[in-house]
Length: 133
Image (cartoon, rainbow, N blue to C red):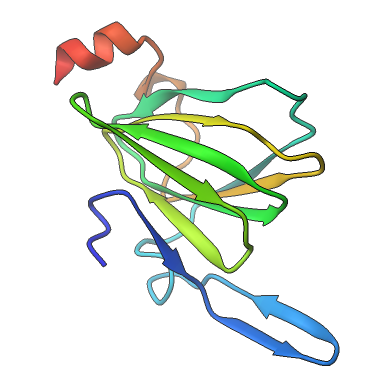
C-alpha cells in the first residue's frame, strides 16, 4: 500500500474461542514510529470532529468500537471512508483535510500519530487550506 495516500488497510487479527485480538506495530503495520495516541469517544449524535489538516504529521485511524465515516480532502477531491472494525485502519497522510462524522453510539476512534502535539502545525481554516494547494 502507498502510505502517502489515504486508504484502508488490514491489521493482524487472531481469533479463537476466547475472542479476537488485533494490534498495530511500528513500521510492520503502521508506516511510522508512533509518538502519540489519542482516542475520540462520547461524540453526540450528529456531531462532527476534525475539521483541520496537518502540515507535519501523519496519522492512522482505527475504529476500536462502533463505526464512523472519515472524509479526506486533498484540495481538489474528497475521499470518503467508513471504519467499522478494529482490525481495519485508515492512513491519513499530512496535507489532507479531515472530518469525522456519523459516529455510531458507543464508538471509539483511536488515532496513532507520528509526531507530538503542536498546535502550530494545524490548518484549521478550509479556505486557507484550499488556497495553499
